[in-house]
Length: 176
Image 1 (cartoon, rainbow, N blue to C red):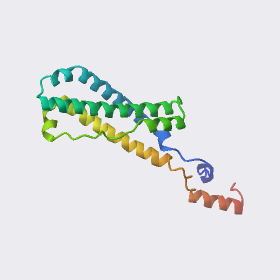
Image 2: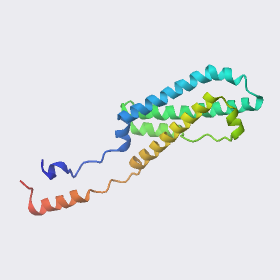
Image 3: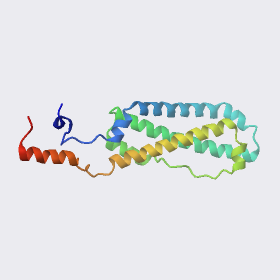
Image 4: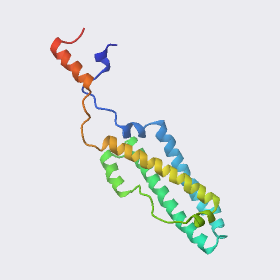
């Protein structure tokens, strides 16, 4: 294989979002996110409900607030993951996905739980909060990468080596 076979002048660059959502890494992230949603729902409907009954009034209020924040964060993450998967599988177009993204904000829910209130929460809830926060941060990072890579609207800069090779081929003819 010679160099002109490797360097292609009129080929669009690989888009990060398109390549990532079709990757094994995305499938693993999707699985992790959905499992965390299921695990959290099971906890809040079962053991968490029982544990919250034994909390002080102040801790019970913190539990209610944090469980709502946790649920909100996980629903945002799940919506983002499902939207990315739908685009990857061709169920919706990138334009439809953008419209949906505008409806689902990946923001961090506001709230101020004191250290004392946090420490009074059941350990399992704190663990789930930490897992959800880390997953949410990863999703935010990926979303920024996707937006930067695909949302710039600018055409990619031409490959300077390919430009030079093209000029050489025009000047001297194609290599045989």
